[in-house]
Figure 1: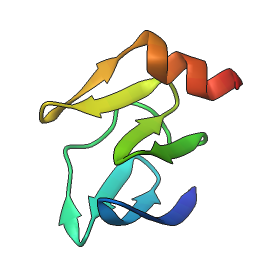
Figure 2: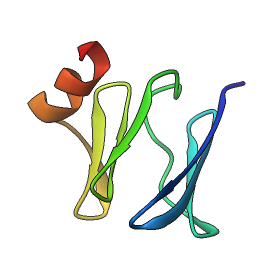
Figure 3: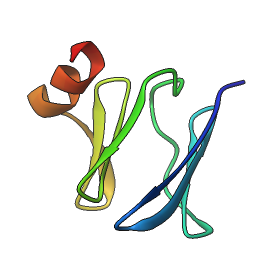
Figure 4: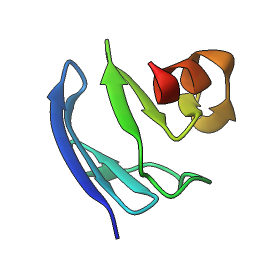
Length: 68
């Protein structure tokens, strides 16, 4: 199980496996496993998925953060 923790403008972001918590509030489960976790400018990217408008979306921007 993967674990990641970071401080962002959103607050404290914790990722455990595919479960994501922002300031203690759990987001819907991410379809990915949580191996590559990036938080930039208050946005959360996990394995090519971006949390956007209350759901996880597969976006080109999120795929970009996997490789670069």
